[in-house]
Length: 475
Image 1: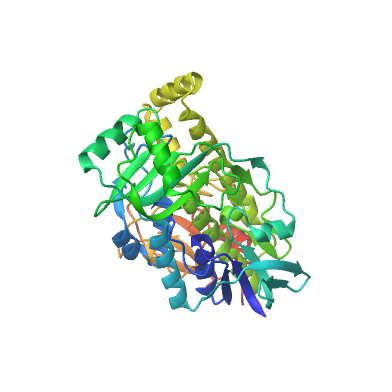
Image 2: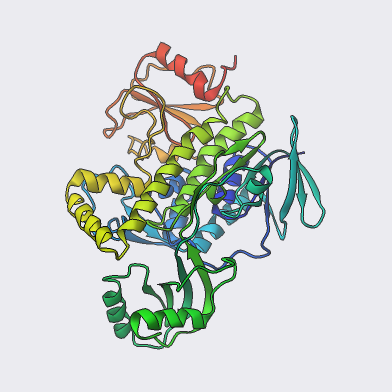
């Protein structure tokens, strides 16, 4: 029996497989498509996702693939300078096409021993007390202890589970693609700048050698969103909005994106769970979708591995939904708000001007950036220190950096007192006696995903918190 079958070989599914395999869990990824997609559905990763890459030793590789751009302009395209002292070591957005991110994660997963089977579509499932039976389109029958649907907004796993996906359907579509343009770069830049004064979904970004990533509002909503637009359709929209199609030709890929906003009513049904777009979809405002899915996987991976290894405390696996579903609901709300703010209606434009003025206040600007980048996420661990429930930024230690110590995917007690102990939990929690000028508390207990589970200096209090996240002690 396979430990975990992951349906969907995109960034969310592969990240989850990485988190499982690095903890010794047997993970099989099944992906419907025969080849990785060339369609660029995500254009960048935010600070929190960069932090996760650092915590898994992938920082140098991901930085080499992308370009760093200053934070600002991510909330409905309202440009404001980055607030000072943002709580992250990586105060930038890393521009990196989603296929590159997916390739990096896939290569890392393969190195860890994850099996990825392509041309494998899930068409049926059933579960009992011992596991999940999965049927593939070619008739193959698989059996696993758990199944996780990471198979996108039209998730087959979610539909087979019968989990409702309430929300709003697509009202407007955006056409996108990578094409060659024959017009002069100066002309393209000038026209785009003028059109974007009123139409923020219009754009043409140079990629080199005359190739541009372009986007434009569609004339309507397609009957079948899976069918990509034609080049003529996209050129027509460019002519309608800009008076020119820039001589577009030779498309590398074309696609359409809707603004549907939906949130799964449940993230778990028995031994089957949902993550990424299978659990939530929203407009691409602020570039949050890819990041949200990878962060789902980072939260779920260690909890599911603990369940399979047999040491998970009661309720740990259910805390995945408890923690991540409210985060997704917040993202859906901020993308709804941003969608309203880019409307050309007079009322929406009046609200946009008001929000722009409010963002001149550092606290407002900071709050919105922390939402977009996910560094402001705080899980509800109850009353306590202001760090409780938040992820801890990478801090410099006397010897190295915090995130370098977290690459094994275990819990970590960062102890500046030298008087604490994790005896009984040493198999699951690393104890690091170190001092950091950037940490103003005596000690912190970090979960494997980097969120602060305890703050203090009292050994008895620490022992009271360890079982909640790391199970019973081992003698």
